[in-house]
Figure 1 (cartoon, one colour):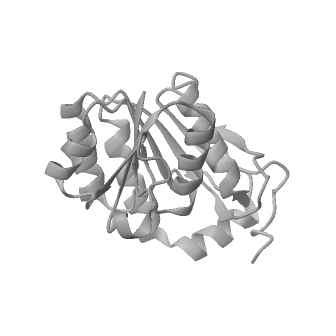
Figure 2 (cartoon, rainbow, N blue to C red; figure 1 turned 90 degrees about the horizontal axis):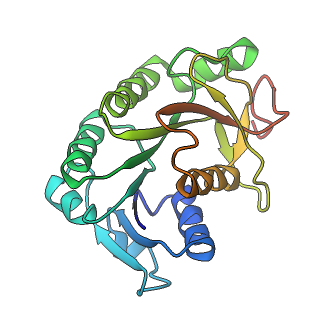
Figure 3 (spheres, rainbow, N blue to C red; figure 1 turned 45 degrees about the vertical axis):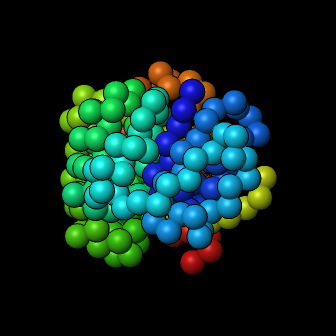
Length: 212
């Protein structure tokens, strides 16, 4: 299996890369701006590093050659998401896992929902909602991850998921747990086929994240 990580210099992406190298035999393509400066190639026999922009369809086509699964670490730009989807369709990519934000379906309720709306703002939420719709309407099998507020805690891989249409519960989740979920999906792509998942840590139904 060959996997492309778009936004490979991000914290979660680096965790996913490490786990894939340790736990699978997958070949990896790591794609990011200034990638050769920001990413160390720990295993040249399995890793290809490519410098590129999400809007560069030519470079993306090169990156997606023989790739089965794409992990997209940033869905902030509508144009970039559309370019990625268009290129994935041409390349025969079978699965996109996309990281986005909570609140795109007005699913965050209670005091935490009010706090989150103040912090994120309607403009940012709408942009992510439209970007998510591009993937949802693409015809490519997908799993979207609507991530709550992130923090780092080594060894904390606990996550809970909610489905689209259900209330979002949970004010925080460790990046390490998100990386574990991504690995779980990669190892069993059908488990959350064409689903948009709310991702949080169990027992964190707080009015705001504990680190705020």
